[in-house]
Length: 167
Image (cartoon, one colour):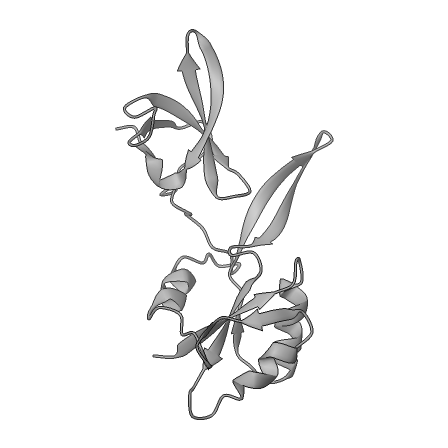
């Protein structure tokens, strides 16, 4: 199993940093997801990094020249534990790659395949045990749910793990 270290990029430079690292011969993993964006009466799909400003780089303690990563275009710094790069938890990259669809985008981010319009039950938080309608994921990976409050539908945003499909 490959070890992975974590690099922190400058704002909105994940793709640039990824390209420069690959050009230097590093194996880089930048998990992405596809998001629907609504703006000015337009709806389009955009690709966003799953972890904004973070990239994973394959690492072998014996052979990887990790110090040069810090001066790569787009990289702010490496996450370290003392003088050594911080190793990502075992299996995290494999788990993320298993959640990718055929296009290489991460899917099912805590929503277990819910589709907009489906009924959900809130399982934690102040609206616990309420029923609602799943609207979708927001930018910060929270879910938007429509709740019936005093005869009106009100949008509430909450963590993805706070909802389950209503059965």
